[in-house]
Amino acid sequence: MSAAAQKHDVFQAIADPTRREVLRLLAEKELPISEITSHFPMSRTAIAKHLHILSEAELVSGRKVGREKRYRLQPEPLTELKQWLSYYEQFWNNKLSILKHIVENQEE
Image (cartoon, rainbow, N blue to C red; front, side, top):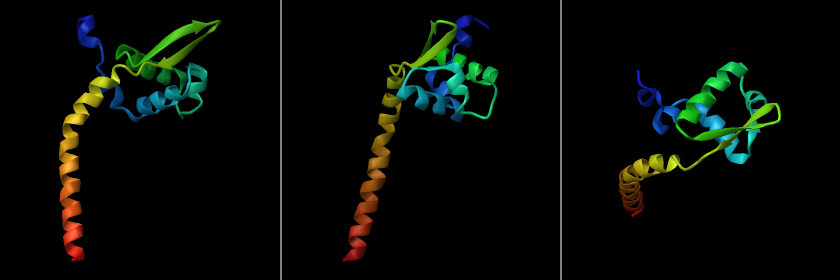
C-alpha cells in the first residue's frame, strides 16, 4: 500500500469514540501522552496508536518538550466535516419545521 493510501481521512479518524474523546481533551489544552492516557482504561501504546491516526488525519500535532511529547488539536481539517454536515442540516431543519407545524396545529 502506498503512503497516500495509508493516510487516514478526517471521517475515519473521528469514527472511533476514543479518538473523539481525545480531540475533546485536546480542545481544552495541549497535553502530554501520559495525561491523555490517564483519562482512558487502556494502555499508553493504545493511546499512541489513536494519536497516530489523528496525526495522519492532521487533526493533532505533537512536539517534543524536554523528554515528553505534547499533543495539541489542529481543528482546520474539521472544516471538511462541518461542510459535509451542513448539507444535511436542511433535512433536520425541514423535519423540525414539520414537527412544529404538527404541534401547533394539534393545539387548535
